[in-house]
Image (cartoon, rainbow, N blue to C red):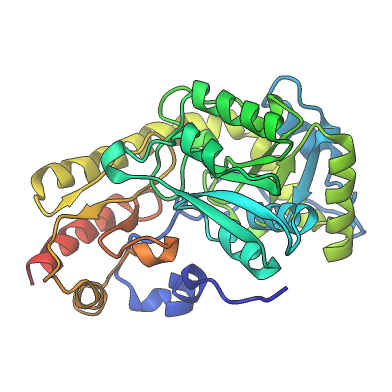
Length: 366
C-alpha cells in the first residue's frame, strides 16, 4: 500500500481550525448532534470485546430498512470510510482494474490508487445534470474490472440516479462478474422517492452507509456494509478482524439508540433540510455568477462559478476565507476544476448559511 494523504482531509476544517472560520459551508453532514439533542445518555455497558460483526440488535435495525436483507448480511464498520477501505483492500490488487464514477468520495479513488490499481473514470457532466450514463460505464468495463464505484445520492452533487439506472448498473455488474459498491450514506436524506439499497437487489451489489452524514454523529464512527454474498461477507469480516477485531461497544450502543429513534428524527429533519436547500436555490437564482444542479438528496450541492479564464480562482478562495471567513470545498477536493465547489447547507445554522452565501457573492465581486 502506497499511502498518500487525501487533499480533502489535509484541507478539512478540523485541520485548518474551526476557530479561524466564521461561515463553514464545507461540511458534508447535518449539524453535529449531542447526546442530549437526540434524547440519549451513555448506557451502563460492560466494556468487553463486542460481537465481531457488530452488535446483533444494531445489525437488525439496519437490516429491517430493506426487504430481503438479514442481520447476517450486515457488517458494522468504523464509519463508511472503514467499509470502503475493507471493500477495496479485500477485492482489489495492483493487477486489477476498477471503474469510478467521478466526482466521487475521495476514499473510493485514493485507496485503489494506494493499492496500485488501474482506474477508469467516468466523469459526470454539469451540463447533463450530473446524470450517470450507464452506457459510458459499460464501455469502460474490461475483463480485469473488479469494481464499479458509485455514490447515490451523489457526493458532492446531491443528484440521484433513477431506479432504472440503478437496475441497469446492477445488471452490468452481474454480466461483467464484478461488484458494484454503492455509497448510500445520504439515502435517508432523499427529498423524493427513496431508492432501495443496492445490496437488496443483487449479491453482486454492496451497500455502504453510516450515521455520520444524515444523523450528525460522525464522532462515534459507526458505518456498515451490506452484502447478501455469504462468502464475501466472511472475507470482509476477516478484514475487519485483522484491522481492529471489533467495534466500540459504546459507539454501537449509541448507534442502536439513534436507529431506534430513526423515523422520528428523520421526519423532523427532512423538512428543515429541504428549507435549507431552498435558501441556496434562492441565492443562486439571484446570483448570476453561480449556478448548480439542484440536489435531490443529501445536504451538499456542487455549484459552478460562471467566470472566465481570466478570473483568478486561487485568489478567490484565499480571499473568501481570509477576508470573508467563509470555507467551502473547492473542486480539487474531488479531482474537479476549481470552478466547482461543494457547499454544505445542512451543517451551519440558517443565519450562518445565509451569511456564507452572501460572502461568496462579495468575494466574487472583489
